[in-house]
Image (cartoon, rainbow, N blue to C red; front, side, top):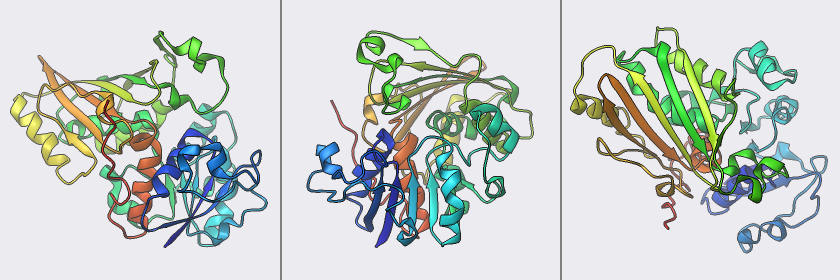
Length: 343
């Protein structure tokens, strides 16, 4: 059994990890930390876990995380970098769901996240945890930088086009929407029900933290300089993410060839569903599941890729469990084959 610790078990990604790992056949939940909720049974905070998780939260100073095989950090940016060095030195594998290790360039991280990076020596060691594009490296990793939710949709949507050299990498556009849970489990005016319900708005238009992460990863797929216009929006639903991606073709290709390109690329990807050309994937078709669905459209020389996922599962905790499975020699889909909730 894999002994698992979770740092920051009271947020949305933390409880999503608990939901998935509580029924994972090869996992033993060992420690779940929360300084504020020390001693509180997990099931008292999250009644959905009654009968599944019998642990109580423990403060970080009481939890001996070095007894775990792997520790997930479902915490704000800056927490994992403070604790990862000691855990790695003790032989514990680390999966960070925040952004501490996503950017290889220290200066870029500090520019966008406004905090100093306290262990830059680990940046090169960290493996970016997008399984479909980085599977072999993840298998041998000790430190995983779990991708952001928006970057997951953008990379999986643009990757086949960039890899094949079919589009202008300098003119990529991503028009993306996320449910309110993407903002985290905290009291904030913008995400109160009466503020976000019956409302729709863009944010981060002048610059979003997921832009440098996405550009850096997309640059690995092409020799062209990548330029990305990325505009996120908040939609009044709890879960779900929809990204509409635009790329300009640089050579002629038929719709059938485009479809075949994507189907071939993701033929062995258990959690990427390439729908028939011209389909319209819906966010509810992925709710509660680790599935990402995409569909291709065409408008003249513009390719349009529609991508949907559950921002808390494939966009966060499910993807992290997918990485854990590979790191411990398991089938990547173990514990992740839930069918989406409908209606």
